[in-house]
Image 1 (tube, rainbow, N blue to C red):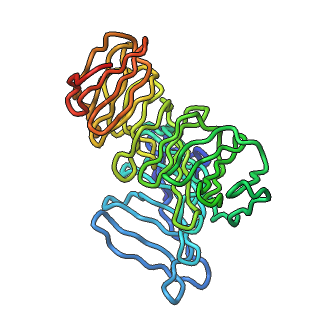
Image 2 (tube, rainbow, N blue to C red):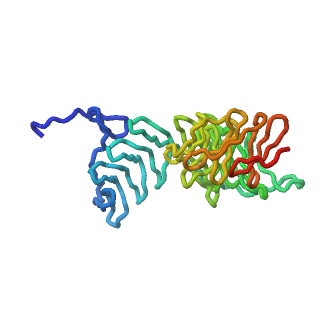
Image 3 (cartoon, rainbow, N blue to C red):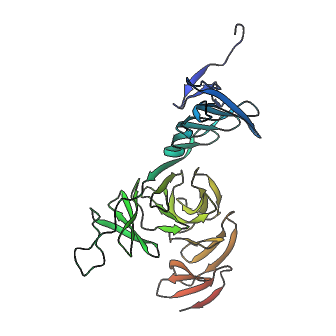
Length: 349
């Protein structure tokens, strides 16, 4: 408009944003519906959602959500009623929060998450694996119940469930095999080699990649499923337990016991002190690690608050849980039992 001065704007970050002066990144508020569709919208408690729809109401084409202030908080695309293509999310100040690809209504590939200063805070890579097509193998040698040719040498294995075992094939494949029949129950592509420790909790396989990223795989009833690779600035050394719907208890690269959100990479809570690299463990409410070689320390899952500590008479080699007790293996062959909830000593041998 004549006589009106506008700040100079340039394309930024390759994300379809515009950077105006030194202010936050703002989304362009437009909805250009493709031929054969009509715009539709409804009011939400926090703002408005607008999209394009076919005559039968199926969403097809771009969509946006705006806050009550008029700022766009979500921009994406629909195909045959499913989220598809590039999606971007913004805070109410117009700053990018996360961006990535959707396929058939689910996140696919690498999603980048951003801090308030518009710098990347985490990268969450999403993948899917189909149902396996392998039937239960028939043994060629009558001495065996079953024989399974995995095509390549197994490099590691872990118990996955009472009747299943996970087998790493090379560095790029994790196969879940039925111990009873030898049938492949899941065939999971690995985005990176896994470290030795795997946890299986509530149907989720938790691990850590060689580069120090959290790896989570969920196997569905038919054998297919989804996996996530969570890369954070601190990195992860151990995946310990599930914390709510999306939280995972980990030992961060810094040494703190913490809970991170596997969908965003955000730190949900963290203990204040650094723990040794002795693999930590978790109960239903506590995360427990080793500090300074001889101290077992527990923090509360959910807020990282101090719960208890117990000093050992010798260097700690490992800790484990048995019933309501924490068993501590010490250098020299001694085992010390602690009360799981209070850390009080129970017995030693």
